Image 1 (cartoon, rainbow, N blue to C red):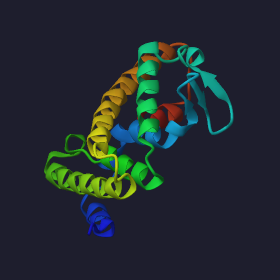
Image 2 (cartoon, rainbow, N blue to C red):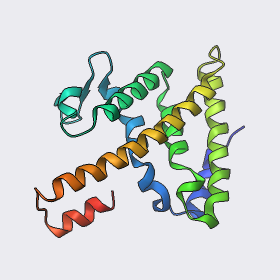
Image 3 (tube, helix red, strand yellow):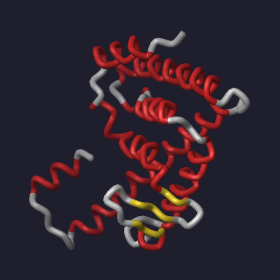
Image 4 (spheres, rainbow, N blue to C red):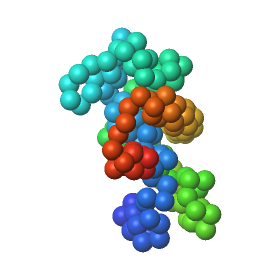
Length: 179
């Protein structure tokens, strides 16, 4: 049987989370926020209560990025993952050997393999009749990674376009540059 507490203790003892969490923050957010998207009507409802249509969002982000975002969200919804499975998916997205220092990459890959085993176990428990769930989750993870890279480029583009128009205090630049 899988023992997640053992893995989490090893992880916190041997690898600082900040070493690669910044590059996967968008992926983890999307896994958490995917239920706030209405893929039929191309709407996103923020936790504050306001709702945006894809046309409104396209004033800030490229339409290609937004269409990819809604496609991935639709796939996530089709999977009907439980809260526990969503948490494991977030962990899988954060753990990636190429997102941390070279000397820690083998440990991160070992942790990621443990997370995949944990996901396989949960999927067999929760969705016993849906045999291809793990490959679908892995495929989703790959697409999340691609979308995350597009998101990073979008954020850079927005920063460059608006940097000459809006002057923020230096402290805000420092805070947002770490995002």
